[in-house]
Length: 360
Ligand SMILES: *Cc1c(COP(=O)(O)O)cnc(C)c1O
Image (cartoon, rainbow, N blue to C red):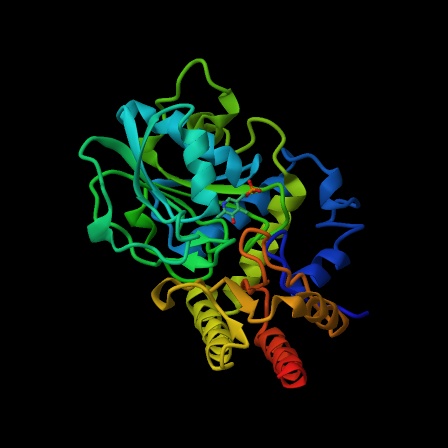
């Protein structure tokens, strides 16, 4: 077997220990004589695994009891519409921070259902920093504030929360579980699973109780948080395999010291990579302002872009895969989610250093 170091932005690497466990359970799961994919979501074995996954996520994130945890389909993108639909009763407009590609998409979808007030917009500079809250044009009467704390493509992250009186709705797709957060400060947290949780096809929504129950009659019922909360996310068939596998990842995180412990590893991984890039005398650069750099997605650009193809081919041969940057940024991007061990960073830095020595 030869497993690569997988720097994919998503669907992304999963912990090897989890995959091995899933492999061992593939044909006969939990005494059912079948795989987890072949049994009813309403049978006791699956119901029990589903409830355990929820409890483990609650433990990991210290989710207060007045929040529902939903296991949905549709991707993070479905929440770009579900949020305005569920919350528009709170007011005629909503505030949105535009700090990257994904917040731009969230804004475009929200505009179909609610007036959007853009509180900051860094699109002109190509998303290189997150403006200080003092410059945000927050409105007095918004239904909620939407933010994207980690922009996966530009590699722009902020870990502070604006001081507002309205519910904060946050797209945490690429940063959930990477560091501790105070869930009680949010109205809604949502994340597609395929970055830092599990396989594609599962979307986690963590929503405060009082925000549930005001859904419009003429909108798709499966986007109504009340319908999904009252049915324990089983109004219709849930993505059972993805839910089961997410549960394995949660258990793996718990047994490794939880979010607090993995955050220390993530900080060390990111610091090592950024400091190598910054110390490379301009051979590699990261375009993001130092105070807005992501722990999870690290873009870097070669001073000589003619070398990009050789870098990608060489790194691929060295077992370092999926380093090609998003076309809107160019260069390279290393996505280093929880499942990326420090050994993957060390291996990448070895390669980068050899490549630099060869081309200086
Ligand atoms: C990947 C990503 C999305 C899109 O997720 P889907 O599950 O494909 O809809 C949205 N927001 C962020 C921050 C992402 O990284």
